[in-house]
Length: 267
Image (cartoon, rainbow, N blue to C red; front, side):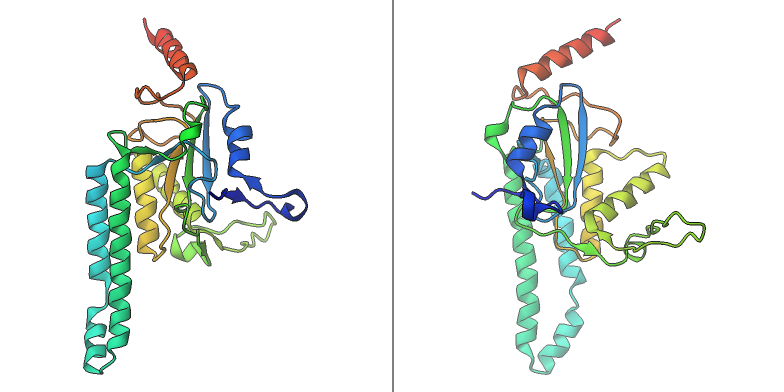
């Protein structure tokens, strides 16, 4: 198959950063008890770090979510306009709208079918060869699925109610307000979390970003990949780690670390 890559500024002279290289040099060296949170707002990014696990969602929860998306697709269609087109004899345009809706519903069904590989944890194994090779906790929010592209936002202040960055001068001039769709959705939800007493979980944050982008008309579906099987119903945080799920698939070094943590917490 193909490699997923990150394209640095000097790629023409130094080459691209392959997903296999990023896993080998960034993910594998991390020790047990270390957390790395990545935001990869780039095209074809679901497997950009070659992490072994991809969160699909628990089947029942995902079915409820996707059912809501399907209803939104149907209800957001401008059927009155299509009726006018039918009366005008422009059936080709109507068929295009119906075909587009059908394609969207088919993609939703495919997403549900793929979630069945997630089992009770909600994760499916995406890179089997890398299972058990990483002991550090790496969580990656990515802009889209591997076959999708990640969009840019022309004006993040208008689309996501984010304030542009200042140039640091006394004039306080605001710099360009363009940005990535995933990054904008992440920052918007992260700021909203800071203003609220309620803590959002990893799974909820992922779902909120997906809904935000869908409502803004973006086709991309953000993903969450992980080096270990972890419980995503814990509150999102950048300065803590959480105990991996007891699945029997995590490497021995992780089990040893968990045992030591349990010993330290015992009275």
